[in-house]
Length: 103
Image 1 (spheres, rainbow, N blue to C red):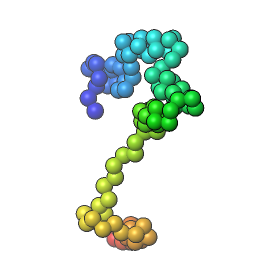
Image 2: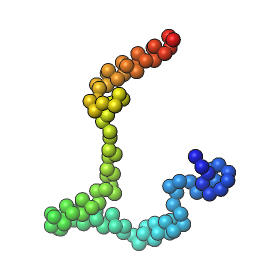
Image 3: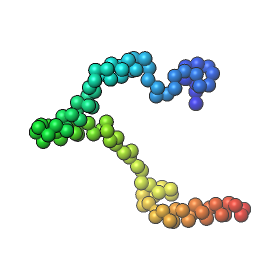
């Protein structure tokens, strides 16, 4: 991996860490007392709001509370689209280990 921000390994800000502008924006939002997510959740939880308004707020807030699952490729190890049962895959891995150990 190439160094970040300098010639020596590990130099620079670590990947994913916020910069000064991002930190300032996050602090301003926190100081305001109400984030957009807090507002959407308040609308969703308010039983006086119509059901369709509450449902819309829930749909918009959901990605921030429950992240989407990653897509999974269901190809088996031999490249076919038919997955093998776990016990067959485990037995094959065990057999390969036994064969290489005795060789």
